[in-house]
Length: 194
Image (cartoon, rainbow, N blue to C red; front, side, top):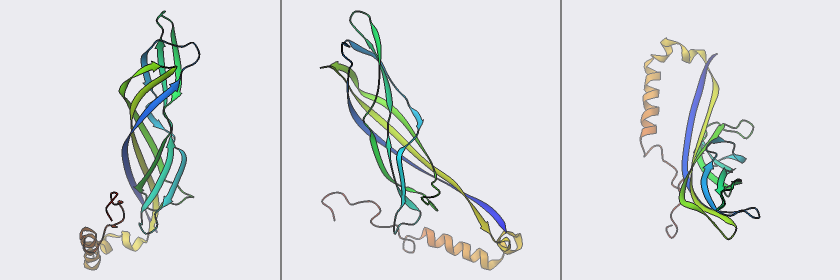
């Protein structure tokens, strides 16, 4: 038996706008000098991967994402303090390409986040308030080892006219929208349209 490694990668990107109101500890007032986010690759919590029925090779991926921040505060008297917190949890639900995915063998999922302040942070009524744009990139990749009969891996068989014709037919079928239909219900219709 000959072996082949099948590798795939699926990428999803989205942007979420979060309005943050974080309570300040007693006695803290002043202004925000800096606000930093822990950007980068992070773990997805409550991860669920469910293959879609009727749409082979695609799965519904759901997870929760927490992004921590650190605010450095300056009081009118010159005192400095730090405040750690999280922006509100982001619940992500996406459809991505995951061929051969099974619950017992989940693909490698990496979540990368980057945050950008939309409205400068302010302190009012004992709350630190700001608006932030959270960019999320979900990368799903995996490798599968496939066992291919050795008869398919020898050069003489690969060059045979019958095999060449079947490969051409498979490519033409895949590229022809009349013969390989994309599921019409893959993207939901906008509200009001049915």
